[in-house]
Length: 344
Ligand SMILES: *Cc1c(COP(=O)(O)O)cnc(C)c1O
Image (cartoon, rainbow, N blue to C red; front, top):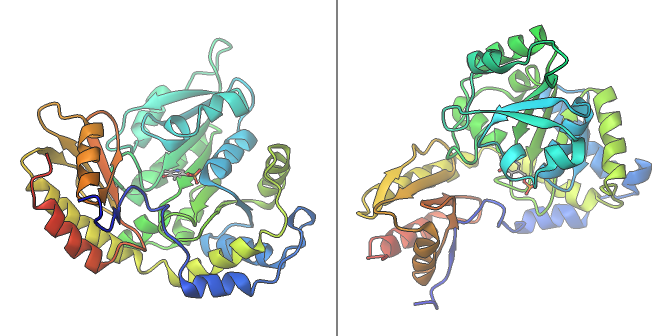
């Protein structure tokens, strides 16, 4: 059984560059980016900034780095970041808010990771020397741990008003913002207007080997560039990667809807399995399901691997599949054959 061709569904980070992307990378014009002389990096940064209506961008190695730099620029020691308890910035970045920025968090419990303006108003600290200063609100869209759920933009408009009224900055962890945009048909600029800073990942659904971009005002990005250097993130001929980013922004955004269709098909198949208690609504490219009868996700993921399906544990009883560029219709067909057999 283990000879089966593995179907990779652990994450949308497993994609490899397509031949056309590789060609764009090989022919990139590069320079030393620490000296701000890598033409291709600059081109990617301004392309993304323009797309979302920002003044400037900063190309970095990872979404963790872009998020953590943003937080570091926004907050002072002892301030607090308001975010959902499922947030990547809180749960999956190694305690970075505390260790990189000496800031604390004020955790909300939203609907599949999405918080409301009202919830935020309720927890903003009063201006009193006992309390940390509520300085930043961080949203995630789509929400990874929420099964790829996306926001109603009207709620974000309200959240932005609350932030403005309380002197708080608003950051977006937009690792999968394009997955939200292809569903809602909203424009990147509508999002850019609402957030003081935004992190977008090109290494997820868009399929580049390495890289995320932080977006903001010129002044913000200037500060961010300094933090990136201090943290050892200054890089040299990064234009080879930036070329993949430019290619991906031009060619891999619209096709995300295909990933969403395949994810919905997977969700439907999983909901028919007797060992599956509940499948979270499949809104984009992430399928999260809860196992019945106390079955451990670690056991189930091993059984899936035996039939050549690679999945990620997502908590004790939850399992995650993520569709992506390298998971084709043919793979989906193969998946449906394998999953219909008894897994346990
Ligand atoms: C993947 C991801 C990131 C960034 O992860 P890196 O592996 O550091 O690039 C940030 N936020 C969310 C929601 C993610 O899913």
